[in-house]
Image (cartoon, rainbow, N blue to C red):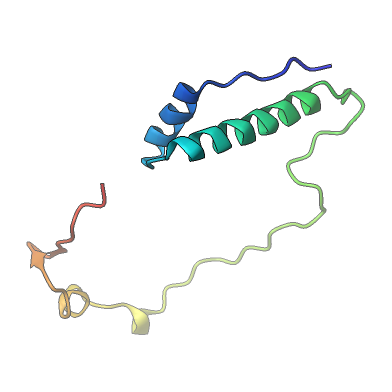
Length: 100
């Protein structure tokens, strides 16, 4: 039997801060229980005997079919065309707000 996972509320808060989300005390308790169940399940899986199971990157025999990249010059925008409707531009580049 796998050892029961222990997660503190502080660890849940830390995970939330890494994800840049704010959790209420009720959500912290809820996610703590959910994370414990998830990690307990992972621990159970790790105890399975898999030596005879063939390793695979995915469970199906599907393979990707690739084609060579082709450039269609008629669909390429010149820099001036690309920037023509830009709200803000500088030195030939779009200027946008930072997303952080």
